[in-house]
Amino acid sequence: MMLDRQSRIRVLMAGAVIVGFSGMAAAQDAGDIDLPSTVAWTAYDTGSGGYNQAVAIGSALKNVLDVDLRVLPGRNDIARQIPLREGRVQFSATGIGATYFSQEGVFEFGEREWGPQEVRVLIASNDDGNLGIGAAADTGARTVEDLRGKRVAWVVGAPALNQNITAMLGFADMTWDDVERVEFPGFGASWEGIMNNQVDAAFASTTSGMAYQLEANPRGLVWIEFPHDDEEGWARLNQSAPFFAPFMATEGAGLSEDNPHEGAAYPYPVLLAYVDQDEDLVYNMTKAMVELFPEYEGDAPGVNGWALDRQNFEWAVPYHDGAIRYYEEIGEWSEAAQDHNDMLIERQRVLKEAWEEAMAEDIADDDEFMDRWMHLRAERLEEAGMDPVYYPDS
Image (cartoon, rainbow, N blue to C red):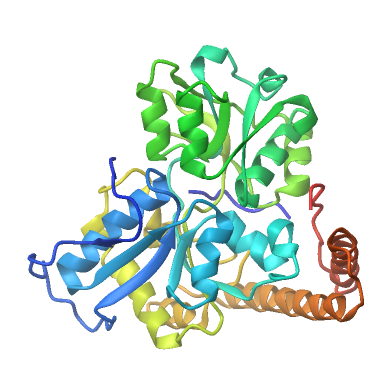
């Protein structure tokens, strides 16, 4: 399952924040977009590309609709997903972990308190950046092989970040045994660790605020390259990360049209909801993201990836009915997109039934349960004619 090319400064505020300025009047007619006075999202850590984009979008919501966007930064996938699952926020501007991995019920989402999640996409950012491994320039690393023996960040509770590095190490037929794993409690801490010489490399989008900080740090920044003509390397990478596709990035720390990065991309951030989120709310949030785009365009690195003409309606996670309703209304939703969406919803149904089967078995040991679940998951997907995808570290 190789997908089409996808993925894809300052913010010094900690904790939950209200984005926007209450004294500012609406910049233009709000039309018939109907949102509550406050909308709540979770997002990546402060300093991340996703958080900075949420700030820019929040300003547009305030300026045009007089809607406050409450952004709760989360250090890892679980921290971002819990408020969404519990209904404390309506949406999450998140990454591959809370979208694809939570749908699949793998890594932390394969533990008993989670299982496959019925999540739905509203819209996603597909910018001109990549997602990859950034390293301190003083290490001399340029290729994956150059990371052998180097210190590489592992973020606790962040399967997306860790699995992405796992897959990328596989590009050079390497594993975590070939590097020195250094644990951090969150994304931001992992990049601060590079700047403080506690670690040499970590995962991020090229448009992350932390990457710009490292670029200005005495250690400097380099992005590890993934040559697009290395077919064997890409086959190994996609074996456990099928959502990555080759992309030549021109946006991000240290990058430009004249200095592109030969690497990989997928949508980031992805605006996510659960299947049971109110359809009208999802419709209006999607509409606001599309129709207010001119208001936040260019206001943060990577934010232009939210443009309507950059959407891929046949990605790896299904779209919410409320979002589909809006895309149908403006003539952007196709029969092919609906067929693909129906297939993904069927995949979620198969996963949900397999999970119920696993939970019904009397398995006391957590490791034994995880092993049983991963085998049962693969069996049921294969029986349904679906690719189970290989997750070596689940």
